[in-house]
Length: 181
Image (cartoon, rainbow, N blue to C red; front, top):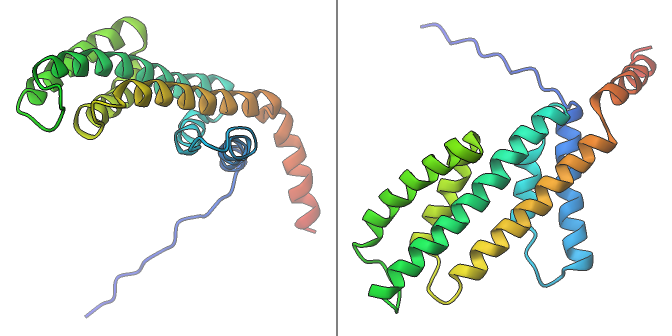
């Protein structure tokens, strides 16, 4: 019997890794310092999803997350408000299932118009709001998700703007050369 040979993947801590960690950490720090009553989780998630290889890819990834959250949030609020007309106490009722169907169709149509990559993050907000958030806080939940995601995406864009790959790569190569001696 032969034992399979396993190789470990090449582990690499690169610029994107460090900038992503920095963006998420700065979001958490700013929330703890200036918004101590707010949970920084969705801002940190926005920062992590918003970081790209360079500024262009950060705009794409961050735009996907931000526009998806905004589009999904507004669709969710409208559909949940409609749902509350029939079930003011909220809860899990069969009506949520066709509302989800309608919401996903509307989400995809709006994403095709405004931002194609918005479907997945918008769908997350739609599902969470319809099935996890109650009638007392569905509006505040949606608006807070939009605000926090915007903060996180803005932090990723700021970090990528302040620390562009083109300026950091020569510095990283110099540091590597000193340690390889």
